[in-house]
Picture 1 (cartoon, rainbow, N blue to C red):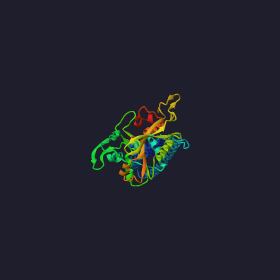
Picture 2 (picture 1 turned 180 degrees about the horizontal axis):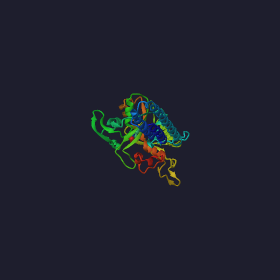
Picture 3 (picture 1 turned 90 degrees about the vertical axis):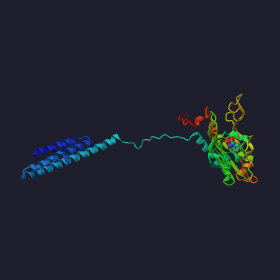
Picture 4 (picture 1 turned 120 degrees about the horizontal axis):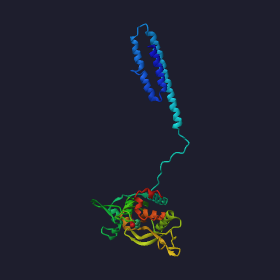
Length: 352
Ligand code: PHE
């Protein structure tokens, strides 16, 4: 039995020393020191010894147990140190190395243009507002001096929504222009007004140059003695800020039901510098030096009245046009198809 104990000690120590990792060491520990392990079965065997031999054997068993425990503990320590040592060589991180940047996006062209437009007008004291995209006929047309069957309404190619009519405000529509915000703004009842309303607008059109959903921005100023001169000043300021310091605007007589007088606004062409000539030829972009921006005018008294504003005391101007077109004019973007803007194709978007 003495030999058996001694052999157990040698074998166990050798097995621990040979264990290459914590799992192997644990397996050896169970084999020799476990509840049903070799140490335990030798101890059980001691019960069969004559009683005078037991104390000496018990002492030996104890010494063997202590030795095996120590061997196990030592190997555990070694393995732990080895693991840490490997960590230092295999898994080290250079804390001074530059990090990997996550992919970075940028604003969509149209969002960026909206931010620029907002900025320009905010600095003139205009407040950015938004009004419903799902609108009532009354705000989109009727309050803007366009009675029910007025032919001018056909120009807006409106989407009507299949919903019950409002008893006073009529049909539900997807707003075809930001002008629907004019009367809504007046109804807030706070004068004077300087608003810039930028929102999605909808028309029944889809071609290479027209989208069923696009954005417009609408400026409106109402105060005492506002005149066309103020309108012209604000538009010129916008043209310089948005397109560049040399750009000018002109007002061309036009017709809208909700403004009187009404104008179309043109801005000098970037390519020919407003001359209409490019070398010896006519400018191909504009033909006569000017590019069309959008509509404007002095707010019609009927519209002021619809918004609860006394036209005897107050006057104002409004202007409005498409964000996408204006943005493309600034960027010199000649898209063969305007729908590229909303296809979410990275090959297109990443160019900007
Ligand atoms: N709402 C008009 C359009 O969509 C433009 C406009 C706005 C005209 C404000 C005059 C005043 O065509």
